[in-house]
Length: 296
Image 1 (cartoon, rainbow, N blue to C red):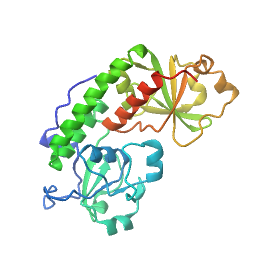
Image 2: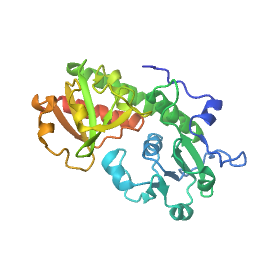
Image 3: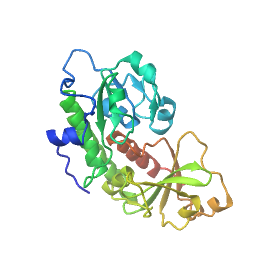
Image 4: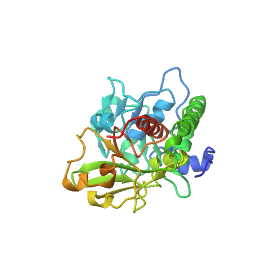
């Protein structure tokens, strides 16, 4: 895994990182330093952690109820305004709110021209060719910090993250080399499973652990598969991430899964597989916690 966390150049910042959306022309300058904190709307869940790492809180977030089940941390203030669906935010609310800026993922199909009616639009990537997800996450944070003139916050956040990872690697030494199967139920018959190329898969590698699922995966490092496809996966430890649901239907097939038979199965709540450094940190904390528990 690459450890190259150099900030994006100005050219790459505008092209790939948290650059201004197409609707923001040269007549829309970067946010100036003021005594008041910028009012930022997060149109994606990962944007929340970027904002939080810089000592700020979003004024509005999409799909808050599911955020609190899937992402959990950073927690949202009670006064955070609901913006509706992530792929279909409430434009009337945005028009009334008039934030200073909106942060949107690069892959979002929301048109910049439409969003720019309400605020400056900044986009960030989750993956980039030739870079690990963690490298992109580092660069996203540094790019936003530069844009908001809060570089010291980003430096401190990255330093804390690197220290946490080093400490967690030591605390998980008794698990080193083990194959972890990471999944969430989407329905009684389907699961979302993480591969080595996912955010969590990269974290496992940094912690000297292995990702058990070696099958197909999409650009984000995950795959939706039938439950039966987990049966032959060579697994030392299985971790089921729950997101408000009660978990698996205990079918005959499920109870015959090797990791269930061997008692190497854990359950954890709330995990955002498509986040950045804070999502990676929460996942790491969960691993450390689970490693100290008895098997279910």
